[in-house]
Image (cartoon, rainbow, N blue to C red; front, side, top):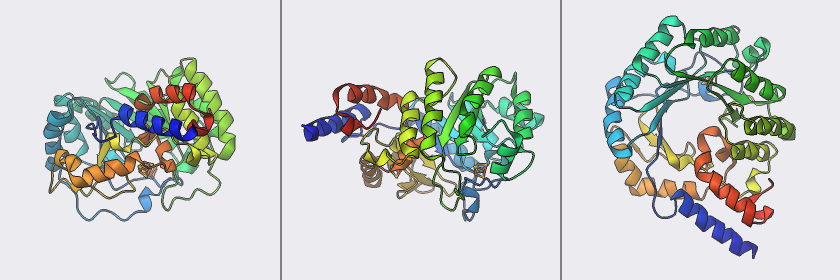
Length: 347
Ligand code: SF4
Ligand code: SF4
């Protein structure tokens, strides 16, 4: 009975997500235009990596947009990893994307965001800016980010961005340092009338110093509080199902869950060296200097990686970039109603 239910749910999951046999084109694209950062955050392994040997030029990045738009229709473009404001190619890419009606979002630590820079981003047509803020305590935020003054930069940036024609959000990494103030951060976002706060679970990033940062099972109560706030209308961007999933992630129980599958195949990333990647832990499916993203997606290499993603149940599916609430919420409700907890996991 349990096996039958599991097979049925897997089939339904495949049909629901379109990942059984046919792979729908993604709606989210990430350009990793930067391999540099001006901070040294303790939870991040990125700044410890060696720089990429070569990279696409600004015109290479810009010229990707029209074919992507023709292939994907409306999609969202984000710039992640490193500090995108360090890269001169950022504004021309945003400008072209904006002219094509593509929604863009930038995640930044705000260190370079003065009035002139904010104005230029607005003039280029940036849709959303996300400022990294892990704590309302200056000391806690600055010590995690490895540099004094970061907290004040974020607060100043919030003032500069008020009134500019773009959506402003906060992004926070959940660690043991800020576990007791997730609700306060959410309250801060509401009181400042910002668009949203998105919480990202601490990642087991290669080379990062996670000593003492892992929240463990204590995260459950903090996440329950967030779930209650979200249900009451607080501007928490994560879905309830994602916050639920984080509880299992932090307590090490995610491995026993079958659903949801990873959403890595619902987006693709173009790395700083031009590689097209669907999952950061799997092989690239091509490089933009040699193949279009569309061709790579439909290639045998693309299909092989998409198939591997559909069957992958590693716990990095809890990261915000790998969780797609919209696709899985219906499945979650179905599974909760009809399947044994052993199949779906604790609710
Ligand atoms: S978390 Fe972001 S701001 Fe901090 S070092 Fe890593 S890339 Fe830079
Ligand atoms: S769970 Fe992790 S390894 Fe598996 S497909 Fe998703 S991102 Fe890749």
